[in-house]
Amino acid sequence: MSGVPTVAHPFPDNFKQLLITRHTISKKIRSFFYDAGYVEVETPCRVKCPGIDPYIDAIPAGTGFYLATSPELQMKRLLTLEIPRIYQITHAFRSNEHGSLHNSEFSLLEWYRTGTDYWGIMEETEQLLRYLLEGDFENQDTKLIHNVPFQRMSVDELFRERAGWEPSKVWDEDRFFLDWVDKIDPYLATQPFIFIYDFPAPLSSLAKLKNDNHLVCERFELFMRGLEIANAFTELTDPLEQEERFKKALGKRRMMKKEEYKIDEKFLDALRRGIPECSGVALGIDRLIMGLYGYTEIGMVQAFPETRL
Amino acid sequence: MIETSDIRKNLKLQIDGDPWVVVDFQFVKPGKGQAFTRTKIKNLITGNVIERTYRSGEKLEEAYIEEHEMAFLYAQGDVFHFMNNQTYEQIEMTAEQAGDAKSYLTENMTVEVVYFNSKPITITLPNFVELQIVHTEPAIKGDTVSGATKTAEVSTGFKLQVPVFISNGEWIVIDTRTGGYVERVKR
Image (cartoon, rainbow over all chains, first blue to last red; front, side, top):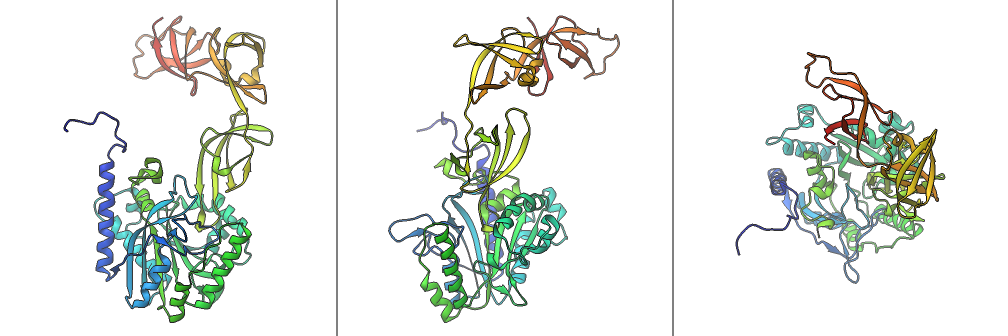
């Protein structure tokens, strides 16, 4: 068969260019981690214990299985093999997340580095971003941050300035998230790049609490013009505390009448045997592309968002 | 009752007794925590646009809005008379209900009358209407500055800026969303 197609093309104009852009970004990410001595690993998309978080719901994938909401638990288990630096580019799946910034399936870059805390990995995240920003495209923001370090602000500082209270000292979960949406997000949208660090302890998830202040945890997020691009922890390596946190999160899911997942005993077992002190970052590649190229909908940067399946 | 997951553009909501329409919305989940839907909504009576944030799972009340195609008959003082094109029923609206639409209403013009709880609340006009100029000063000779405009009054009494070459008795197209001149038409 030959000739031109007669039906409207299902992809937007210039989508070919976007695919090539994604390819270039992936290639640069791989070369950055290769040069930094990282080993690329793979973990399964289908798991038995999807991780336990009150606000992250997994998609069932056959009896006893779920699609992975994050590769975190498996990647940390790989750290017991004494490979000091690992990364992967994979897909993560989350139920009931749809919108201009959310698609149930999305591309994730995740990396772990031993022997460093969240400050070290924050520095590395900034280096990666600068490396990706170098070269073939220039927008106003890239000029703005040229030779200027990314902004860094603690959650308490941010809330003191924008919402008039310090969440770590007087924790109020409902007020925290509502203020984030109404008062913090509009401010973050004005910043080209900003790291927000030291989250209140109740939002520690798998992060270690800060040694000198147990009200906050060693966690940061990176925002690019208000887009939440990356989330990182100094990883909690204490098996007892980790088990407690899983149980607490399960209790919360029970209260919210949400499905209760099984605690990943094999992961806890790895912690009991001992995983090295380390830090890890998860970075959303689709949102990174949105931020770099000014797209407003995640569906515009994915070849097959749900609407195109 | 509906839920936040039902929110989409153009959904009509009833909030504190008033009808609102969703102009824009976004699902947000800050810090991997609680989820919200941030909305931009417009009051269908006042036209006021505000932002409102809903927690995921929060219940919302849908507003029952109907639109009926009607012909504008005539105005008597501050009362505007319309006829339903299907049922031939005649209705009256106040100047306040007619809102900005009254600047463009001419006899027999077809409009959509918006009903909320069985009461007419507002009028949706076509985006473009044709109206006749009833008064404008003649162009001043030699005024050739490109883009120069002057004030003109159309048959409804509405005044707007038009290019200097427009004269009395001519018909023009007006964009009802902006109230601006679009082009001259031959009739």
